Image 1 (cartoon, rainbow, N blue to C red):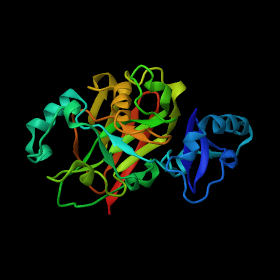
Image 2 (image 1 turned 30 degrees about the vertical axis):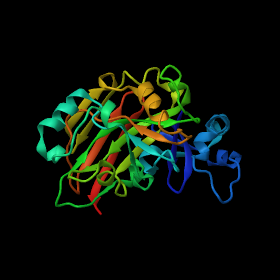
Image 3 (image 1 turned 135 degrees about the vertical axis):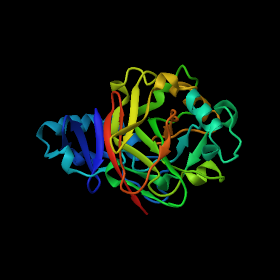
Length: 285
């Protein structure tokens, strides 16, 4: 199932070029009061929501996909976990280009570890990217995003995919410079998730997906997730050995070679096999 958030927090099921409005399924979510849960309650209750959505969908109001504003499919991620230089060719690209590494120490991912991005940086495809510090280089990075579906702590790679709710496309927008990664990658709108959540059962192997990104029609990055240094199971094992992963936490798995700058007025078009494609407009903040 392809599940989206659209317009003013509506819930939809995507079928071809239409969205079926199944917002009424949200009535099944448990009521909350302060202190609110630190995880995403929709993702934590995804199985129940899917069942109800499937019942509602045949009779639901239909919207043309082209006419809706797509929001991030995960409204309240507790953590955005990012994998640095997790493709071999991108590692070489960064090491060879001082405009990318800015004399920062670049390590293999096993030594560098993972890093966190601010959850306030998350937007959906329809909301676009608002660039800051235009005097500096701002780059696109396209990645497979993995949404955790149930609590995972010290999970082995053999059991890791059991803890996945689904997948989406992730754009990790980056300001180049000497500061720490998380600082340069966490401005508002610098994490784009979308266009929807594809549930785990629709992706047989997250380690064998073609993906790409074009800017203004020019192909910039193209690869396959088989080129990951640490694949999805290994990333879940690695991350969950340091902290518990909660429903709605997102792991963006790393980007391949071909990162390049974007400017206000650009249009990014990203796609991942089995998930779909999304258009993201770029503007100034």
